[in-house]
Length: 142
Length: 493
Image (cartoon, rainbow over all chains, first blue to last red; front, side, top):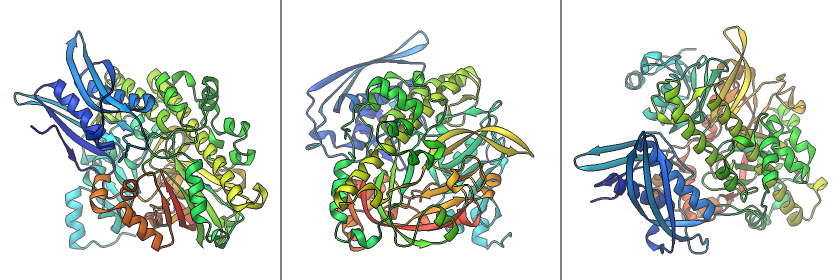
C-alpha cells in the first residue's frame, strides 16, 4: 500500500497520507513532510524523541503532531526519518497521541535540503476514516 | 472605461462567476459563495487573468465571509492560491465589530523587503561581483539549518520583540537614519513578549541576522530606468546607481508565533460561534482576549523581522566596506525604505464617508500610503511612501510610490512581488538549478545558493512577469512607477 502521495499546489506542498489505522496514517504523514525537505532514505536513526500531545479533534492533533516535529527538527537540529505513532486515543473530550521520531543530527555537509517546510497549515485539512483505512490530507507552508 | 468582451472572455467569465467591472478590476459577486458579506475585488490585467487559479478566487470569496469585513475582500495583481487568504490578499476589518485572523498574515510574519542605495555606479563593481557575493554569502547565513553568530539573551529577545529595529541600532547595528526610513520606524507598537511562547523564543534566539530559505534573497542591482524623476530624487535614486535589496522575514520565531496562536484561535472559533469556510481562516473578534493575544504576539514577531533585516543590512554594509575598500560615508549605503508584506496593522481609513479604525490584513501585499499621509517618512512626505516590488530571480524589481487611489481602492495597499505560477515541485521537474544558474550567468547575473534545487524552485519561469504586475498597480493609480532595478548578483536563501 502506498504510504503517501503529493498533490500539485502553486505556492506550497500538499499531500495525502494513508494507513490501515490513524496511527499509521499519522506516521506516514510525518514521513511525507520530511521528504518534502530531504530524501530521508539515507538517514540513520540514532536519536529518538518521544512525543505526547493532546487536541480536541483528530485534525488538530494531526497539525499539532507535524508542527511539533518541525519544532524539534529546528531547535534540536535532528533530521527525522522514522516515525512510530504508538497510540491515538480519545480520553474525555480530547484526543491523545503518543509517538516517537528517530533521526540523526543535522549535518550541513551531509544533508542536502530541498524545500524547507516552514509550517503546517489548516487549509484543506482532513482526516478521513473509512472501512478501507485512514486517509489524511495536509498542506504545508514552504 | 468598460471594454467590449470577445466571446472567449464571456465564456471564461461564466466559468469563473466573475464580473469584469473595469479594465483591470474583476468583481467576485456576493452570490459567488454563501455567506459572503461583501464582494471580492481582484485587480488583474487580461494577461494576468489567464494565470488566475479558481482556488485563489474561492479564497478571496472565503475571506469575504469573515465578520466585520469592510468594502471588499481584495487580491492584488500578483494574486495566487495560498492557504486561508490568497497570496496578494488584502482585507480590512472593523476594529470593534470585526475579527483578527492569523490566516490573513501567514506564517512568515513581516516577511518584507528593504532597499539600500549607494554612491556607487554599476561600473564600480565590474569584476568584483563574484567576490562580493561570496563574502555576502558568508556574512549572512542562509538555507535550512543555518545559524547565526549572534545568540540573543532572554532580555535581548524581549527588547527586540518590544522595540524592533531600534534595539539593533542601539546595539550598533546601523544608524538612526535607518529607523526614520523604515515602515513604522521598524516597529509595531504593542509587541508583547508575554504572548510569545517559550518555543518561539527558542527558535528566535539563534536566528538573528539569518536569511532563511525559499524565496528569500540578497540582491545586488543597478537602477536601469527612472520613470518619475521627482520621486526618484526624493528617494535618492539615480540612473546607473548600484542598489542592494534584502528580502526575508521573522524566521522560526514568526512561524512558531503563527502556529501557536492559530492553534489557540482554532479553539476560539467554536467559542465565538464563527462559521469558517476554511480552517486556516481561524479568527476571533478583534477585541477578544484571544485576538489581542495574537495581535501582540504578531507585533512581536514583526519587530523581530525588522531587527533581523536591520542586522543583515549591517553585516552587508561591512562586506561592502571590506570588498570595496571604502568607508561608510564614501559608500553611502543608506536605507531607502523597508516594507512589510505579511502583516496586520491597526490603521485609520475612510469608510462610507467617515473615518474608521480597521485592522488591515496584508498577506503578500505592501502598504502604499500616498503623499501627505502622516505615516510616510518626513523625507518622502511630498511624494508618497516607497513601495518595493522585488522581481523573481533574474527579472527586474521596481520602486513605486504610494498614490491617493490606494486609499480608495485597496486600503492603502499594493502588490508585493511577481507572484508564483508554478509549484515548487513543478519547478524542480521543469528546471535544473545548474542550467538556470548558467543561463543567468550568460545574462550577466551571478547566483549563489546553498543548493541548486533552490535555484530551480525560484527560476524566473515559475513567476508571473513583475513588469506586468507593476503596470496594473500603476494604471489603477494605487502606486506609481518610480524606478526599475536590474539584478547583477543574487544570494539565495
